[in-house]
Image 1 (cartoon, rainbow, N blue to C red):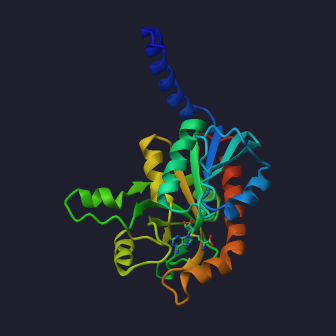
Image 2 (image 1 turned 120 degrees about the vertical axis):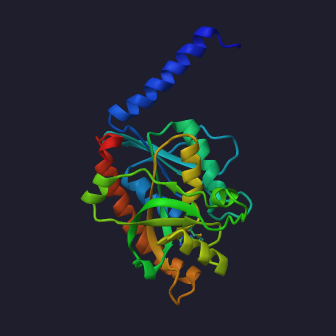
Image 3 (image 1 turned 60 degrees about the vertical axis):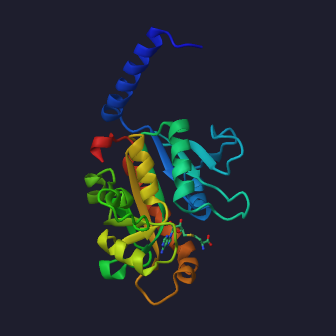
Length: 268
Ligand code: SAH
């Protein structure tokens, strides 16, 4: 059906008032994006969410959506789910971008929280089990040595600022660097160092890109499962610490959600 002139006009007004409403009313809809199901399930239980078969996502995607009400918040936890061919969690930037895009369109959240695990640099003050809030995020594996494209590749974006939340909860703050590999090549290492990053993951900067594109504020909560500049092999250390560190992550996310409840974006 062709839109009438009236539809056009009212749509514009509607969008404008929705944006200004988000600034003046308490946050009501939270979207948690979590790459691995192991990390997500304790939070699904904590907030008593239920899996929604009618996710609003395209047919056939492995993305999972858990939803429910917690205190005054509508909470959705979304995971990219298991790779349809290989059955492992769909970690990394491509699935993270797609699931972020699909979730924003379907759920129209006021705020995104990307929660997950990360590698940490002990030289920058990270230890196993630390929970970091990222101040900004960038990529370390998109090297395009042509003026301006180089900056596009790095894709530096600021996280939504939460000074009051940081003051209230005892969380570390650091820069997050994202790439599609769990390990770290010498070139990655140089870029991570240029990004001044304390923590390293495989999704953050991709989620920040999509959130920025669609103008949804996003914050990044990362718990350190492995020390990237230590002497243990990353994959081994990651698996060894995953369960214990996930518990620390879930505790921090719960505290953050409790803090957010009843507040406006401008009060965080
Ligand atoms: N071996 C794991 C694979 C997980 S990939 C498994 O058995 O399932 C690692 C996941 O944890 C990604 O979602 C990434 O964001 C995060 N991560 C933890 N430590 C990391 C590191 N050192 N570098 C990059 N990502 C890391």
